Image (cartoon, rainbow, N blue to C red; front, side):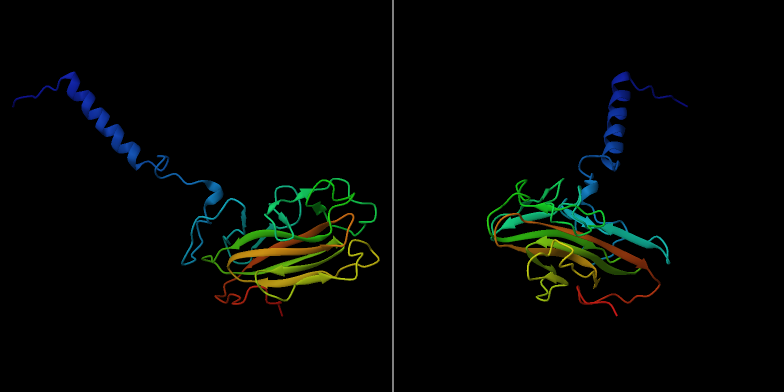
Length: 235
């Protein structure tokens, strides 16, 4: 039998070709990489599941029945609330480290936010619209999702879920920032998909800001029933 000797150049060519093939198949190759912030959960089975913008918060999927998932939507650092003045452009809401002395409603850990750092001393009169987007995936293991919380604002506010014209929480008559006019807690069922929380705050002049203590809670079930209408109050 005759042995075939390969020269050094042939060895190098074979090694290079093998390296290129391995790199192309690797999940770390730039052509296959995905940003962790933009991926939907691995167990999301929504028909139109697509990468989400970085400013959208995502509720986790269930790993087993009987579990509970929670997602904080409060006005705190790290939760990307935005605000616009009189239908102007949306900009990041500003956390106010020291609230106005009359803003004495218990916030439950949430922080007061405003359109600027001058919120406690005075901002122009008008309507300030705060928004936050979040996503509830349709998961392999279903979950019943409820949005709950409590808010306050200077002067008055209406809190909406998506395009529903009926607010899920509201306060009028002024002093919606003080124990003299507290707002009741709210709760609403939430279906899967992309959602928007909108807090509309009317300021008649002087200081203005708002806080929202809110969270999503998903209870993992073995039922295939999902809420069909986002914002529907739970029974």
